[in-house]
Amino acid sequence: MPETEANEANFQEIRGHLDIIKAKLAKPTDRDTRESLKEDLEDYYERALQLRVMQNQTQAEELKEQTTKAQQLARYAYRNNIKVVVLSVVTVLMLAELILPGLFMVAVSSPAIQAVCSHVVVAIVVLMVAAMAWR
Image (tube, rainbow, N blue to C red; front, side):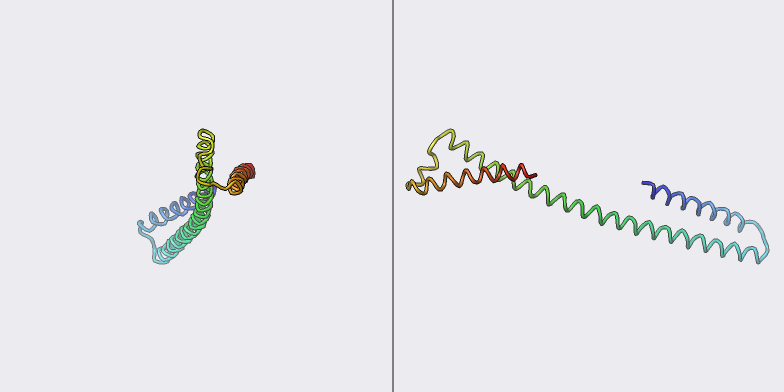
């Protein structure tokens, strides 16, 4: 991330200035110079704090974006898992009917209901194929 590299370069620059000021403060100097250096030191600490706050805000926004993406991915996976389960159940039922013809028709004695069930199964298969092709 270039932003992270730029932020780190800014932090390094501020650290360098702070180190220089601390070194100057360690040497004996007159009162005015010392006060000026202390003010500079406070300014650089304040600037470092501002940079940390900005970095924190940026990371909070990135976290929010990544959380939203993760939630969208979870919803997508959930929908696809439901599709897979339904497709698996329909496939097992169709294979059972293919292997043992008339297996499910034993439960339904009326020819009209048998025809409706047959058409419903075909409609379900067509809808599933269309839904898979849509994605």
